Length: 408
Image (cartoon, rainbow, N blue to C red; front, top):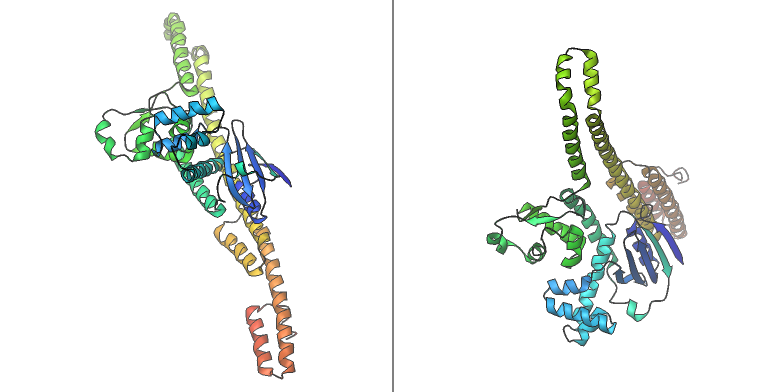
């Protein structure tokens, strides 16, 4: 089986649930402009995940966890290149870790890769059924539900973290007088603080720290709030525009000095004021362009927020409907649909959910009606008329608006 799509129209969580429910075995490949992530699935469970932008994250994970030293990491990387062997095998050959510890950290690296994948805003995916070889199955199956719950929590929290750090090309510097307070920091904060040098971008910090995007953003927010680091002034497009505007102002003022006397003589003239404004057309154009840019940013933000909300509503609907289809009991289907209507405000999907819920209830009513008829037939043979009346009354109490009320 092959399944293709993109993350804008299909929720990643729904894909994993579909693979788990159908006990699929194969490879899910998700690709963006800068990265490719491959998730290996065995009988519905995730058994490995790799990324083309790992930055040797496994080695950094082991280093920050103090399993290996910086010197051992550098030596093993060098040996791996010389022998053309994977990093994990070199660690085992050198006797630096055991197979159990390696498997734990490989699993941790895979989890981080998947959590980062859930933070992607766009990308194309393709799933194919394939028979996995032992090398592709790095560990026992991960708990898919645990991954989805943790990923959802991280997505919600990441939106808050990105309000402070809105781009991954920002650069931070250490604040003065932080040495006396460094003992208050935890291991993660100390590790990332040691990498802050006024040159590393947030993207580089993620790669070199050994932590995933979520942990890095969270630690950076904590260091900012505690006064350990601050944003370094870097040359951004906005800064360049401001400098060009200042330069244009200086040139404009120099051009107008010879005309200052003429302007003073014609101060009261309407036409002279028009000429005065036209002479400043260059500055006026810059102001207009700036205003248009600001309005575009505001409108774009509003559209983006609306798009994100629409995508979340669509993803939730798809996930619930997939869960409904995978349930065999009508009561479970009814509960899922009821929970959706209770926990979601009116949207384009609530009418469909309501209609689906009514159909489920009709099926339940017909099922229970047939069951009641069968039961009463047995009671009639036994001449248990009280039991018959009780059975009918129970059905009527459960379905007071039933179309079969007159027949009872």
